[in-house]
Length: 161
Length: 228
Image 1 (tube, each protein chain N blue to C red):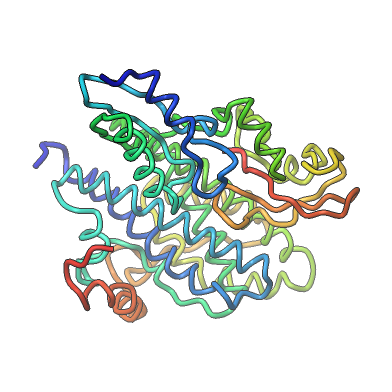
Image 2 (cartoon, rainbow over the protein chains, first blue to last red):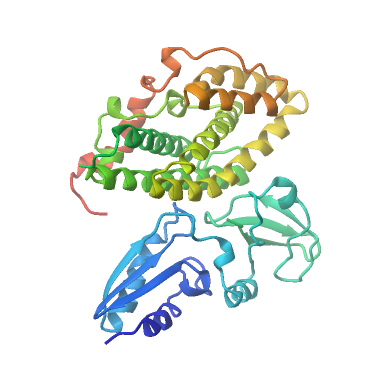
């Protein structure tokens, strides 16, 4: 008999397909796990709607549940219940270690250009806030490109969403 | 079939078709945009727009008992509900930026309205789309600010003028007027006047839709029922 704790523990080992240093649980995209006998229902929210890793995530969660002997039902929830504020403190630390600047906390409103163009963003390599925005967009929908003027290193900034 | 008013699905399909077709148009800059940054930006925006279309089609399909892929790819060009603005093939960068900014500004008005819907799934999805679109608007605003300052303004102004009536055709009624007010407030030097004709307004299609549709659906039509 599978327990919800076992499922959470297994999902905590499932890496994000695009940023494998962080797990799906660290990323905060698993909204709920419900167990009824062998049936394991997982609700999860994609980071971005156009995220190409969506199907890969679903398949890996399926496999994780099956490896515990459960019968998975992974449901994608398409609403705004996920935000980058759901990334766990451990997840943020792992992002920083891997050279990704974690997202700034989501404030009441939408991000503004003034905000993004200030030095409020720290370089994950040297910690300097002497950084500037290079491109709002990056290699995946969830990332922007910034440049550190202190250590002369470009880096990826997780978008606040 | 649901007892819900059909107009709700219509609004959903109009938004989905706009995002799909514009996403396709934006993706045409992949590899050939004027700079690497813009290549990345337009490719990423295209990916987001198509992601929004997919989510909207899925919601529409759940409502009507259909299939999201069938909605996206199995209709004839005449049966799409996209507005003429998104169909236009813009080969000039100024025209592309003008369309991008006008569409994002109009789309923001529409998404706000959808986010206030009393259909909870649609409102929740619209709120998620809103957060992603915020970055598209920042990008479009950045470009308009950059081009509105010096001698580039004449070129941007010309591009806005040739696109403007199509942009008015994205929305109707109160939403159209709200859009017009936002354009006037943001670009006081641009005359946001006039009324769109039938050829600019949702419900008609430009001659540019059919070649796009032909290319977009070619693979799916070549092997019907294939699983990818």
